Amino acid sequence: MKTYNLFALLLVLTLFSACKGVVADYKEDKTADSVITEAKLISIIHKSGFTQVDITDPWNKGRILHTYILINKDSAISDKLPEGTVIRTPVNNVLVYSSVHSSVLRELGCGNAVKGVCDAQYFNDSIISAGLEDGSIIDCGNSMQPTVEKVIQMTPDAILLSPYQDATYGQITKLNVPIVECADYMEYTPLGRAEWIKFYGELVGKPQLADSIYNKVVADYNAVKAQVDSMKLKRPMVLTENVISGIWNVPGGQSYMAQYIKDAGGVYPWADDTNTGSLTLDFNQVLDKAQKADIWLLKSPNINSLMDLKGSYSLNDQFEAYKKGNVYVCDTSTSHFFDRFPFHPEVLLQEYFKIFHPEVGTDYQLQFFRKISK
Image (cartoon, rainbow, N blue to C red):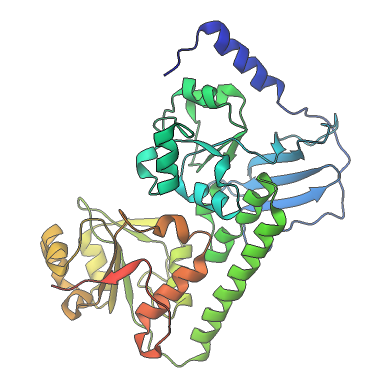
């Protein structure tokens, strides 16, 4: 690894600081409307000479988590801009913390903009792996404490990461590189999360392509949902996840994962719950609520049979889904589940519909889950 002396470090920091936008008063276009229709945590408004993106704080109602001012690289920066983080677009040198965001950039035709990653071991992506091998992509270390020298080495236009409550992000905040807080995972509905592709399209200069992809997703998702709603189907109770080290995390009743189950024609045991995140339960709490579940969906790289499932916790055989052999597992070590479903909820909806209602006989072939046997 190349060693940077103090002078070089200060020089690069100065260059980064010089790119920071000017904050001043501005004349707002009162007729402008957000291009966002479904997502609740983001607003995108095109204004004269720039685009303003407001991210709502998911953890503090009524507050803004971050405001971004997107200005084309070929345009001059006005001295009259709203307060916010200025990002010159299109970005073409990005550090990403999650494979889901490298995947969406690739779908937008800008996968080569990913020049650095954190937590490289979690990227189940042959292109990223090849880039790390040949040095065209830099491994910037652990996302909780990135290697600052390597971040400086790649001189990113922006850093894409998933925020968390009261996040501080450590030393990278001192580099004055725009930190894009990708709060899409906190959205309330599958289509709401998918609509964040419009934001990433703005960042890479592909807003029309992003709109086209999203519109197709909406049409396909709603077509499956309409099919479910139009049919008289027996709705199975669906249990998700499994107990690990005494803890069983299940989606809250108002989460987008619970919405998937409902839209695909299933019944969720915690549907009456009001949480949008996860519920932390113990085994007995889950057994009490979902013992009669007809179908069990779980994600694990280590469970390949019912015997494995019982071996992971001896009382797992108490669930009706286990007894009936209606257990489906997604192997997270090989599947592209986490990269694919956030921006293509129509695919996961079809997957669930196929699992919940095999009697309908759809042509869809399972991509993520497989039924396990003894």
